[in-house]
Image (cartoon, rainbow, N blue to C red; front, side, top):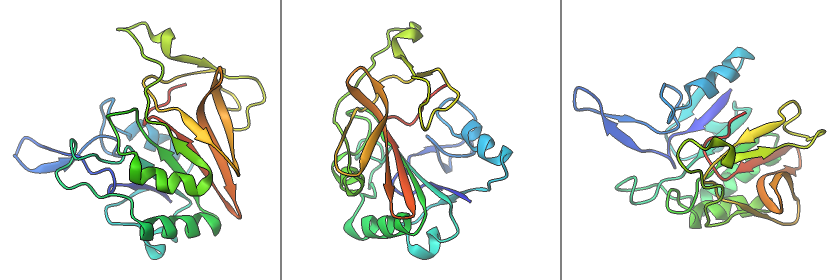
Length: 207
């Protein structure tokens, strides 16, 4: 199972009936702010895409192969955001140690919560910097292009990715950079006992 967090990221909007529905990086969202295409890639390879609307617990994570946390809420986005707390961090860390794969997708400064989220990331030797890299003017998309060197351990077939207005990363101890733009770290991974972590400072990364 691929488990997508709807707890730390829980933005809502009104539908045509006036009811509140989740949006921004959710499986069923078909526009560019959604993850329907991302989910379809997993489905194509036989994975089930599920959601977790509560705080993570070992029972709720035990059947997940991958747990994705995207763009944690700020008070600007959600009236009462759910911040990453010590108990959540310990639960997630222990799940990764036992073999889980954690994917952390942040955002650039002003568009994601950093203080609490970084407490989780730093358990794995990764920190999201409070910045915004790769500004793109209008439709000058090549401004956001980053070439990938042959032999990359994660991006094995892609030669170039597009990512704009992302938070850069700082790494230490067990983490290693897997994508750089010059000296700027764009994405990193860390191996923790039986599991691992992938981190990038934006919710969207395009081939």
